Image (cartoon, rainbow, N blue to C red; front, side):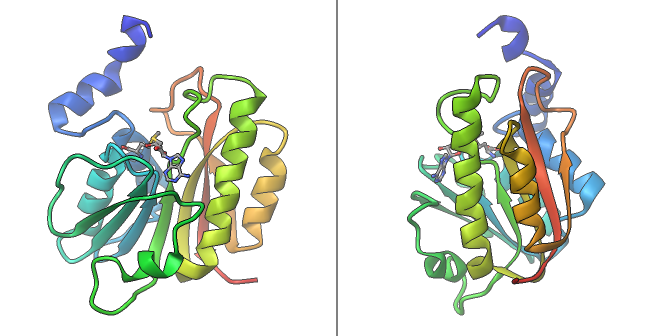
Length: 203
Ligand SMILES: C[S@@+](CC[C@H](N)C(=O)[O-])C[C@H]1O[C@@H](n2cnc3c(N)ncnc32)[C@H](O)[C@@H]1O
């Protein structure tokens, strides 16, 4: 990877501001523009490692909110009491365990985030990345009815390609409003875009 890519503006800003990765600015911008996370919310973050979105979500929900993160990889850092992280595969993980994580009584989430990406690269690659990322979005959409409260919100990453439009339509069946959004912090070469859904309704 070139020095230019490694040390871009967002990378430097993340170091200065104490975020574990530059991806923090993607969720910051999504939330500034789309208002998907509010104070006191309970948030599920799928594909949460190394933890920059956990940090941004924690700031957005405040001390009385909570965040549950799930990733194939262990999150090495402890972000504080109101963040629970779990090592596991979103495709196989029992949604009942997610809604029970970190609370005495199971509670649905107000917002589901997915920054999950296939391990093949950053999305600048070919159709392989695209189809793997569509598969991860299907995992999210299968999980949403079991974990998200009615009226709740979603942001999930996908690498654009021929299946993007059908995915947008499929997501629209679950939400009253759905739109694609590309944050400025997404690298120009990346085909990543975030599908943002407001107002979950179970079809
Ligand atoms: C781009 S990173 C997420 C960065 C994170 N949002 C942050 O800000 O620190 C994508 C993550 O998705 C995770 N991932 C990919 N497939 C997954 C799956 N099936 N279940 C859980 N996590 C998965 C990867 O392990 C990787 O850590």
